[in-house]
Image (cartoon, rainbow, N blue to C red; front, side):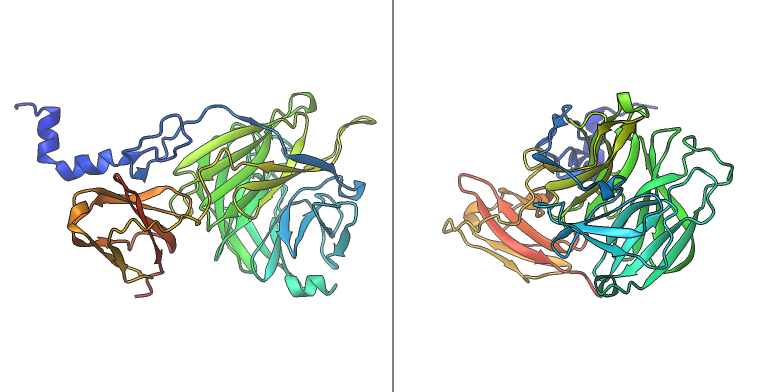
Length: 412
């Protein structure tokens, strides 16, 4: 049989070749950025980076085992991971002036993490030495919490893949210290002492008894202790540390962004080491996807405090791609009309004959290219696969033209 050359294959299967050519690293901050790539394939690579906090502030000793972090009601909220049933709220400016909110009737077996949605605060009581059969997420109604009469129920679960329930202390891959809450689910990120990977498991976020279903694993080469997620920015950040002994501990923030849906490990993955040597970081939170607060618990060696409990702030604006919707409309006296706007399945683009044939890009609010092609005087573009949000239609040439449009959910 006659062998087909590489170029013959391209001629025979142009669509396949075009689809392949459009995939690559779309992150301009990566060392292998591909400006021809339209779709991110998760291949981005980055230079090693060590980051230093903009500030570090010592927390009150009552928070010596701070283990999770959220921002709510214009305050930072944390909790301890052993016995203490209080939540603690404080401001960045003055952590010493804190308020305590006891969760009356609750038990703190091993509270490892905290997250929230519009109506509830969720607390992950799932620290596990391999033998726990009462893993749970506590759900606390927000209004009642502020009123001092917290209404609490629980989301109980077990891991679909766990068969061995013998006590293993720091020798199990079914420990967990991190989770996030989305619109309809809870995603657990395991703290795997043996493999130093993390595995994502999903749960419904409704009270009852559930089986946590395994989704995916990723080798973080460390122990994951906290998570924060911004759906509007399409970014997940995990914190943790490498090295199990106090004298060898190195903390990190692992960034995942530009992924598909909740397939968190499908796109960009960047590990940032921090200057917080010997610190056991335990909680992380962000409001804007750029500024990240981190807490660490106290690290004690006999009677010597190696690292006191602290709050840290990291600003990653010079590391991440731009996270902004403030891309200006540029009037170059060139006709460019996009309709309908908002749209849910298609947009129609009308332009002048003079710019026919030029290349266009559609960028998301983070500046990432999500679609592209060539300009025609009037043509339709299928946007049904895009997530709802603000997008920028961009034409580049001697003059750059931008136009914003909004993609809405398709309710058909």
